[in-house]
Length: 361
Image 1 (cartoon, rainbow, N blue to C red):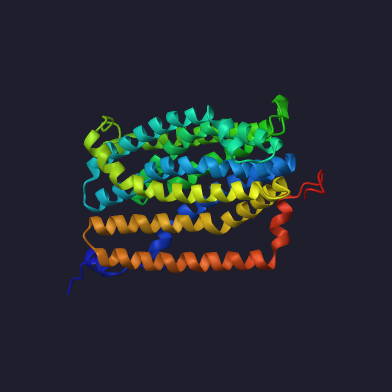
Image 2: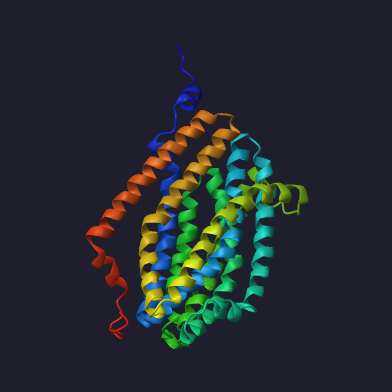
């Protein structure tokens, strides 16, 4: 009796192995991004503990609109997965272009926030020294919005296809570039000016530009054009854009509201007695906490891909099974890392120790 392997594959519900096959490269890629963020904070902490506190306050404000743009642009992942599952590959290219257009428009609008930067951080009511640092960092960081959104759009393309190994290379380029530019621009090495926290902002912008350039060069290769119309689909499509925003904006808004909640928290922390020290301590704690959170986002992205593909293939049962497997993996990871936070807190805190200001530390 001849067995249909495709039928057997379809009837087998996704377990940990299938979820990890898609998610593991995303976990590694998110770990690269997390490592990039951690190294950035460590260098800032070694330069100035106040700069570390200011950087965290800025990221709360910056992330609120950035999450809306980045997560909306990255929602291309879900569309790509569904088109792939429904054998509509030629529609993938035009969809990715709508995401790129959204990234460009949003990234340019983001620069207008530089004008309001000083007013935003004056409203937060932090110390004068902290406000100056926050204004400088935020203004420099705004230039990173456009390339960050483009990276999200192209990453959504490869993630939706299930080719998640490519994301490792894209984030790896960003990681290496960010470390180099941080070293040059924060401390002023090799003849570059020592810009401190401003240099950290520009380093992020330059690193994300390098990652975006690399990502686009991969996406526009000839092989992708033949299969997905990735070049020919460059036309702006208002109907497709509306459909993309209809589903992508709520996803981005969820992340944006979480960023807003964190911003309110930072306003309160900065207004506490010894607010500068409180902000710096919060910055250290949040950076360490992200070690437990960001890798599990890779699991969530992998599950989203499987759900999109299975729904596109009209198989909701397999989609549900993928969700449960992903939830189990994420919980196990978070609990495991959380235990190390309790048992070895000094190990993590030592990364940020600044001997030049022992009283503040």
